[in-house]
Image 1 (cartoon, rainbow, N blue to C red):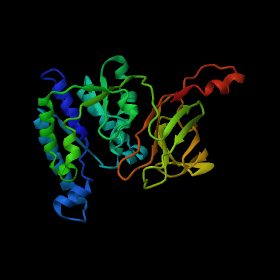
Image 2 (spheres, helix red, strand yellow):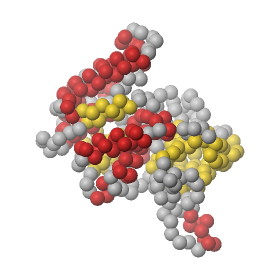
Image 3 (cartoon, one colour):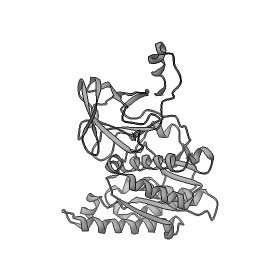
Length: 355
């Protein structure tokens, strides 16, 4: 559903005749329950999923036509549905190059992208990829004014997004057009009709991304302190929701040689040493320390494997069935300055603070 949010905003809110390009990251082919119900088939194979993906592409093009967007404006990237987080953590370089190529070729004045705060794992992972592309391939186009980037949330109620977002007023006519576009997605209405149709009356909310946006803690991450040599993550874990696995913290960033890498660590139920593993190879890379219990505590993580001049992204994965509890946090580099040695520890603790 994030797709028609972007298309609608571009077509209705920008100047008449403005050129629009809509990119679909995945085909939505790993969508088993609606497919099982509609096709009355329990076991689904790769051929079934490809057929479902083609059907969802057809629905997407029909929705674009309702919104006044020509089908030639659509680009289907065919990335693996429901697997963008795994791709981001393990092997996303080709996807980054593909996204960079699309943006470079189109040269948009305005770019709409998912928010890293979205609780859909694919949406937040795609948001991280796009942030990496914008910061590394386009020499900070938002700072130079060459491009304005906007983020939107489809899933979740993250204060990190909604407290900063602005609402776009819509007329009854615009809401009616949105409703017609949503009705084109018949595969999704079969099991989630009420939820999907409700999107038509929900005002669109956007956050304008800046070159140095303040990072706001989200979900069970209460605060983050990035020091020169370590990262301190304070956690408050709610016992309310049922979780399908124990919490895991992901830290993603560029190494000193420039390669993108991600590490994973499990959050224990008591104070202990924590093993840090490379998310792709599963090799042991370092050790962290956890102080706390199953409901609250602090992780101290060494940052020697990451570049000190690049941003890092942090996510605590606590899935409640399908959706995440929260998305990713974008942590900027620590601000380094000469500090007299006796004062170094005290000043370092305030270099980058995420409340």
